[in-house]
Picture: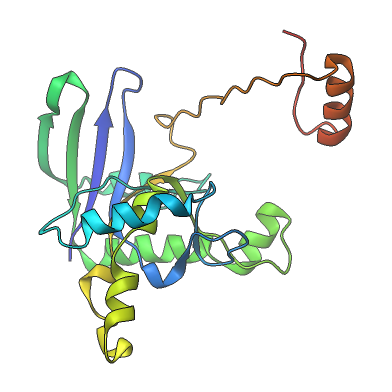
Length: 223
């Protein structure tokens, strides 16, 4: 087995490191209130799903780009692998000057186990509870960063539903889509604000209510 580290260079970032891995759709639920290990970070528009499923279900091959985020402030999962001088697998420009990508292979059992151990630590209920003050909550390890609808329309659910003996299908490759795993602490991953315009409100009262609601958790300024 080989794990691929991708390093992307764009006009906006000199380096963004990701890990190409397969995740288990049995651990994913996009519905509101989900407590699975893999969850969406935005609402899923269910009306968008049927046409996308129809397009994908008969595809010979599909290549959606799905980004999944982990919260790894100590950089133990992805970044630590570069200390081992991984072998370069590819190095080329992407189309239309969009980016430059390099890929490095990790195939030794020791390093693969290192990745698994680091993820297991992040998934520890005690670590999760202490980090987010979330005692008694189920662990969220993988958060959908981009491509939530692509993952929601994966055809694994239909394959299992249509199977005469669903449990005999549990090793089907469709259960394990490839995604790019990214650390939210990677310097190359930039989060930009989403601006909203609000109409028909009293500005002073709105700011007052926002100060009360957020209670020092974020700064509010007059612009």
